[in-house]
Length: 94
Image 1 (cartoon, rainbow, N blue to C red):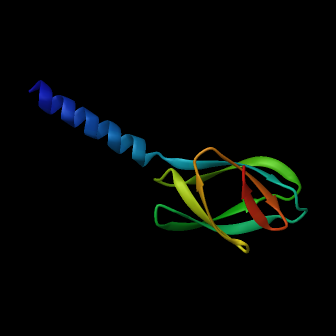
Image 2: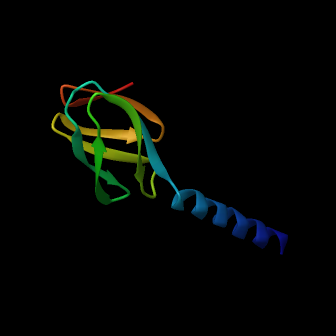
């Protein structure tokens, strides 16, 4: 009985941790232009706006801890709590 309860509880915790995942992005946009790019997270497409001439954060809501940003310079895969720099319309990680 205790074993079944432990397995059930572990499964519940696993489900909850995945159900509330998202990707938190800290960015510094060095361009004066505000960029709105398509983002894919957990198979779902959404749009994210990165304001011009600012350092800020954006949270991509979804059930995954990584996402792909589709910019003019190519696709960039980002993980949770990543720092990026946007310069000349391109994303640089770090």
